[in-house]
Image (cartoon, rainbow, N blue to C red; front, side, top):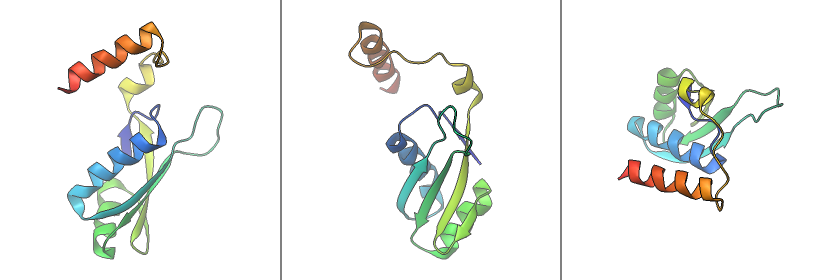
Length: 107
């Protein structure tokens, strides 16, 4: 199971999952399915690897299940993401300042 901030977009989640899995082999494609509030499904990602052996390595590392060269990995919210207040929408004064703060932190 991968722990991450599930409040991010599907594309951002897929990028982070792919980055973590790339240490175990060549990632071909990642599709993330975050369960939003009110949904009964668990959040997960499907990761397609270049080789079946790489997929098995990803499954062993993150507790997923393989289907051919692909792996299904469940996602879990990090503790800090669960207590973090919701971000202000971009385009608002608060949202723009939080975006600037995130950009400063990443450099």
